[in-house]
Image 1 (cartoon, one colour):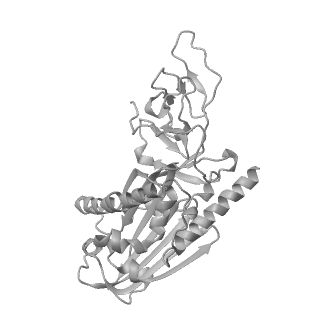
Image 2: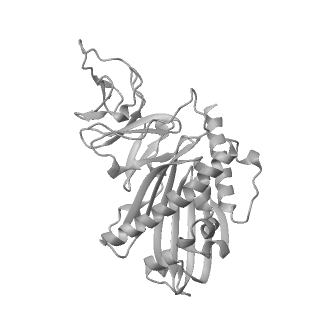
Image 3: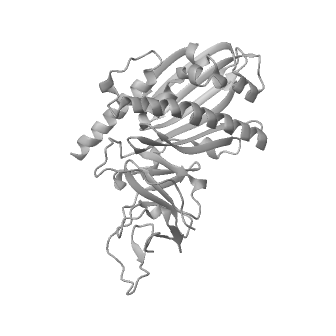
Length: 356
């Protein structure tokens, strides 16, 4: 089956972006990679994702060394990735294993091979030194695969620098203005706390004894009832975030409040575009397809019709200038985003020094 996807973005001769490479990025939802391969660009590098004859997910360089066609737009034949242009086939080690043309001589060139791990329903790719790839460093999102939780999820490509999207999740105070139907004033008027734990950043928002929005109130069956809100965002470098949202009757201990866990993973495609993977789970209304469809539609609208347009337009107004060079005003809700940006800068600089 021939792979399909959006056109390859324009790439410069050398990568324009500055990225952390020795880390894990989300490449795809595992269930989205079936018999057809995928053509993707991560960190300015073309990548092809496919499953070999055993069903194992593989990631190799996405540009055919013959006439530079996107291999991810080809097909998989006998467990090997076949180029859509002239039919050369490559296995999961990057080796050419079939030449359909007269003589059948196999070229010596190999594709780049990227470590790829399938965990918690996600495909995680390592874009740096393969010898340093440590699966133990993949953030723990085991709840995505636990039967007590039922998640709605999505994936899209958004315009704008990936750090702007991390900022957006760490700064929940925007919700009152961008998502009034979802959380009302809880995260704008509530108490805020920000801290670091090693190389992770935490942003906590608490609002007690306030009304739920119609969206969340309807989802939880609590319209017109005051609730205690607890929201904590945990940032993992370079841009994988866990959002722990809880609500319960006033005075309910946090651990006994209803939990809606979420993942927001941002993988840079180019400096101008970002792969956005998200999921939100619940442990109620399980198996209710109508409920799940409504929940997905509400969240998809919030991300794609509310968050993404304002971040896209903000990025365009930045004119590709560095965030700090623009001397942004810093509000008291920016503590998480500022800490994450500074931590990422330190990690990138440390990586550069180690390679020098």
